Image 1 (cartoon, rainbow, N blue to C red):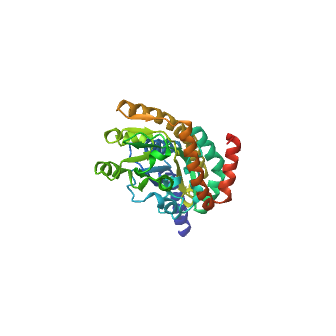
Image 2: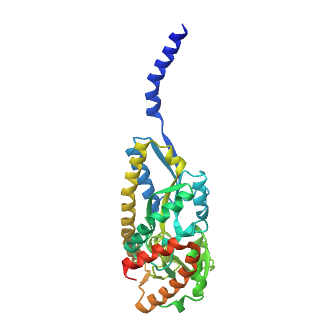
Image 3: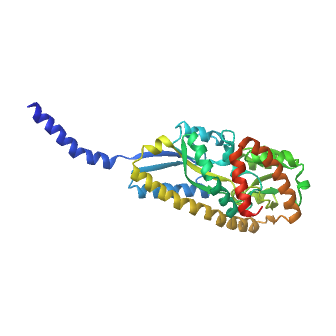
Length: 330
């Protein structure tokens, strides 16, 4: 009798198992820094949709835009490392407190266009991978912002013209740039910028053309000077323990989608920059380019700032930059 019961139970498990496996799925909750309408968040939504389709629903990524999960930028590297977040969008320049080398792509005036910035990232990729492994995570794909310029109420034609500005910045590079050039720089969330402008606490900001449109900057500012200080790179990182729980086949499907996503997002940044510049002009913003003399002044400032940063970042950062300079002829 006992052997018959065991046989029946075993048979039931064989019948039930395929249905259980078919219904089983993994859900990741993804932290996003920007509102749902931002092109980075929209890209993340396309990534999540494509992953769900490619894996037949085996992996579902639920987005939480606008930092709605409560994590702040500088916390993100450790939050993914500890498994508090399975997956998150992490701006490289915001986490240099934990890993200075990751801010290589957030250093001022190393590159001034998307082509150069992607070259810099590709050269740094192996170093980033090694560093991220120490933080129990890996990058699925990266995206980039259009290069940041400065929005002001008066025209800026030289480094001397920067002195005295009360400027919103978004990272340590902006704070250091302000200190060296006489700008009263304040790091604050983007959502607080407009009220601060209206209250007279700020009279300028440094950010991209896209964010300038998002903020309707023409309502409070008149000039956008394209100093192209940096093109911030965002990493979409996943916790390694969460990653290793996925079946090998699913991992391959996710990586294939991620590779396509990276190309798409880097190309999209250029399109978004052109569209946003047109929108700024249409709404009365004066777009100022940087002449050779001003560019030389900015490069000199960048060199000083990078010198201080390289002392923290170490030999790996210097090696990547030497390789980059050799390729670009700098």
